[in-house]
Amino acid sequence: MPLTTAELKRQFGLAADPRKPDIVPATGNFPKLVRTVTPGGHGVDSSQPGFPVYHRHVANPIPLGALSVGASLLIFGLTLIHAKSMKTTTIFYTVGLPFGGIGSTIAGFWFYPQGSTFGTTLFGILGGTLISFCMADLPWTAIQATYVGSANSLLEGVVDLQQALGLLIFVAFILIMMFLFAAMKTSMPMFNAIVIINIALILYGVSLIQASDTLAVASGALFVVVGILLYYTAASVLLADEGLHFLPVFPLPHVDS
Image 1 (cartoon, rainbow, N blue to C red):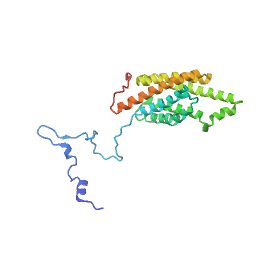
Image 2: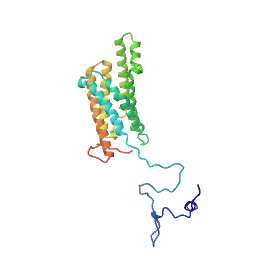
Image 3: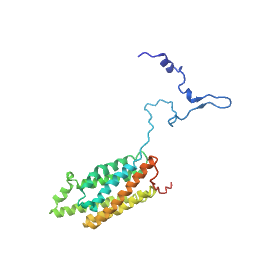
């Protein structure tokens, strides 16, 4: 394709300066002024990098993480307190695995570019815990069949499975308990949610080991409270990011050391 006269002038530096509208010539005692910020708010850069420069803003992953965990714990708590006469927690797995486990894990990944070690670790652990707890009761994992098949009787296999799930809950409690002091620098609803979820995990773990329906109902009520608190946390942060501040976030004091 032949080069035009205008293209040749541009390549040899003979064309008019395309940045001339952004330059104010020197007059009198005033120096020459050059625009340093583009109309879009970015710094003027006339270099030609090998790869394009994208000005991106990473979205806030807190609403996704809080909603995924909150929805999972809310439906789990409702099944434990036998809402609507529900006798089993099976419906929990339809929410806990795809939304709670995977959604929370994805939210944890997106805390990486924000440099938040707290958010990355907390939501990563919550997502992994939800996934592992769901897999323990899903039939295609054959975990239940392994416990029942290796026991001398069906009752003994069920008891062994309940004991193992209780230990899994206690391990999750230890992991989440580690975030209690760090949560004091987040927000009041988030801090309260972590406190209550630790209490609920203790009660539910004991209920599995002791086969106590009363403790299971008590833990279910606390899980419902945690779900509501996480719903509020997600809604307040989401609305604040959109410029709507009618739901206060209740941030806790953050002192940089």
